[in-house]
Length: 255
Image (tube, one colour):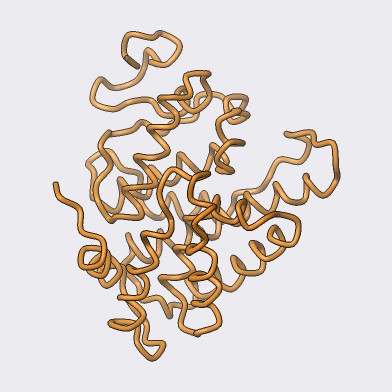
């Protein structure tokens, strides 16, 4: 479908990978929906993506996509998520982790890119962007660099992430919080204190919020409970492999 549409398939793209940015920027919401589900599932389940993606941004104007609003996921960070998954799985075409890290560390929001009717919505969107940046940094360090959850870089991201999401929560509803599934999942994996774990458990357990997200967030509460009472018991640091093991035990996937 993508190959047959000249608006989605960039002429310079390799036949072996699907150009992601044109899909996310298009009005073909079914394809964008699939791509986001594919990348998010690969992260959450610790499995490879179904598709090899070309994450090149061919034009900054394409980053203003309507799809990103429905799932509260800025398009630029959807591309980075695909990059980290590919790097984690050692794809031959993956970007280096240092390149991804540099991009996330130096990334800055572009003021004036979006116009909102209320000033607090502008602040909230900046917070959404920052929450994704921090969550993806923690995911990069854990899954690709294979550091422990007590690594200072990871813990710095988690501390800031809780503050940023807390700011958004003051203006949003409990339903909206489920749109931050990736963020809360990363906090849960790296949380060493019971207070942090309670925030994650209470948020992901809300059944009425799951209908707004592509993945049923409440399914991952048993995964985190298995991790917290197993490898992470007593606040012990964990590795990404520990989380994947807990996911395989508490939420097995038949392939």
